[in-house]
Image 1 (tube, rainbow, N blue to C red):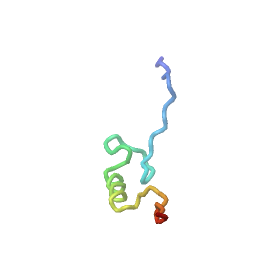
Image 2 (image 1 turned 90 degrees about the horizontal axis):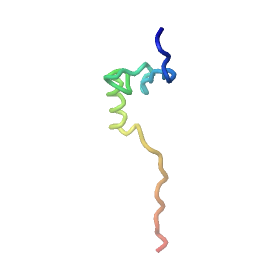
Image 3 (image 1 turned 120 degrees about the vertical axis):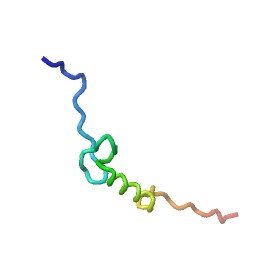
Image 4 (image 1 turned 180 degrees about the vertical axis):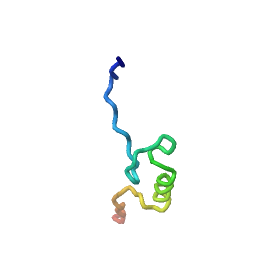
Length: 60
């Protein structure tokens, strides 16, 4: 009789690009293609952290 695991099984991680199950070779993606799509989005500026524009201090 096999022993019961101490922790419950964790659900499989999903690729953030297409939603398919991730593979260890391209983690957290499902393939090199999705990894390249993500890299292209970073390099083209599609991903950005929103921020407020700085106010000018012209009150001198």
